[in-house]
Length: 356
Ligand code: ATP
Ligand code: MG
Image 1 (cartoon, rainbow, N blue to C red):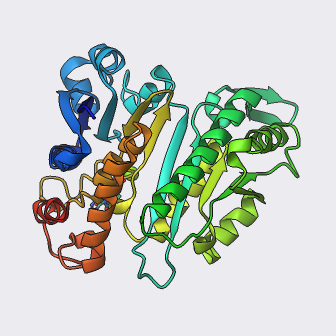
Image 2 (cartoon, protein in one colour):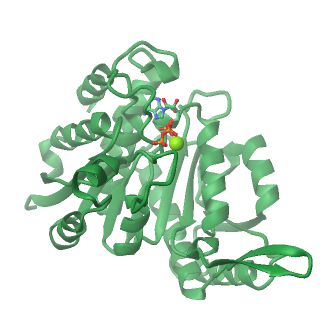
């Protein structure tokens, strides 16, 4: 088999993004040779610092290079100014739009020895729902009224549910290849509120069910959950869930809630995924309070690297990284202060590289 070369855009952004993205690069460079992967890296700008330097939070060059040259990317974090700054808007939101990264995928996993082990993935639709941002305010007989459009399409619902099904199948394959997990068989939970919103969420539900009835998902159990009861069950029995698929807003809320269940933002990865392109992105922000101290937890980023590799069809490389991270966490010795340890970013990265 010949060696596959992957070209990866590196967008550290601001704050601890600059401390954790280099760790992501190192882990890719340290993957064993038998995986037959080679990586090339392109350093790209985005974020608040880029905005101050160039006048653009997402320079056109960054988008052009990602589109024309890269197979995938790693995005660190960007600071969001506390007061609105004229001309500044979030570059990751813009990137999702420009590259049609229609899915936000967030795995949430605890150490397997936890009292309540958790191993789930939340698959959030990333392009529509209330996030079409079509709002207006007007005056009615009783004063000011504000409205927002909640738009759900059959196409976007179908494709996000298809992705959830594919993820469930792939996770099952990884388990069969020896990945640690609490689940024995694949499950997709479709989340909505169609008892109240019969048209919008009703369409999401119908399109999701139709997508998940495809023959290749025969081995996947499909269930549904009204979103409020989903929250209740997610907090009481998180161990029951494998893959959860949701429209944009519910997915946003569920994924932050689920992240809280595993203790530190520094552990939770995500990926923004479109057709043939994936950007790995830790769920945390730029963490200005710990920036420059060398103690940021690199695990969210390293897991985001693995997640990106999964979507670039390199499951064996992804599994290697997940296993090394799990081994570090299970040993519990070299961990950063957010997890109660005293290790530095560098020490954690070294330990994980050794475990690779
Ligand atoms: P931003 O505006 O960029 O989101 P923030 O102030 O909201 O910045 P977050 O990055 O969202 O900060 O982090 C919230 C809290 O979690 C902070 O106290 C931060 O130090 C902590 N935290 C976030 N990421 C990590 C990490 N990788 N390692 C350790 N602690 C982290
Ligand atoms: Mg934040």
